[in-house]
Image (cartoon, rainbow, N blue to C red; front, side, top):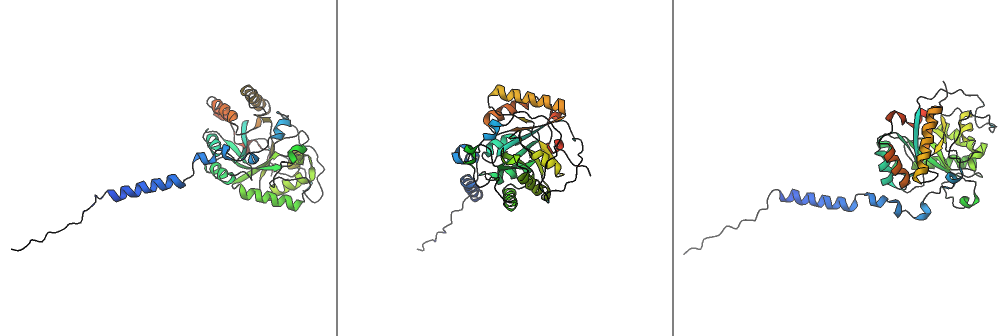
Length: 312
């Protein structure tokens, strides 16, 4: 009697199984390698990397408007031509957030407010490039927040290699500024981080303004010292320039921040335009998020609309 041959069939898996397994694998890989907010937490940045706020503590919280002074600019640095400036394009408050590049979740909060904010990034911050790309992608003005030598000897000792110093040559100043721009892509302008000593020195500031001319950058004087000549040198250079009027968070106490904001509103009404500088402290961001829920949208301006622009 013949034995019948059994046909063995290869077991077939459902058609959906392989795509499903591939999808699960993709998700697992993404979770493992994709950057997340926790890796950008400022608490994971070493204490030595956290920016110093010395100048904010000693700078005047409010700065009066003044016409540019006639500054003795070193010869063969800047043309001695006297420049005339156009009126401001708009009235209102322009907000600049300084010291960006240490905490991307904090920056993400700022970019989600739905108002124009200039993002000033420290070149040696661990996430400087990522911060610049985020701000640019969302249509905000990017600025190079250039570290400059402070007056207080205690804080001079804490300067790192990103600081412009008073004993540097013009060539070194330009090299440092170029390196800063490389680390902060999309920068349209510059303001000083600290710098209460350097911004009082006409020659180094003339070199800075010449660099800004060559790279088509505007300059905002953070006014970290009443002795600063930065805005005067910028105006004498034919540069597009501005000056900080109010520091929002000299103190991070809620009542103090509120009073600073009220000063900014009065400044904008009285003088037409007011450049306000704040920092990504949790207290500052909490206040601004609450404030922006009822502030008039037309009050908040792009910082470039509140700069002095040379005629012609």
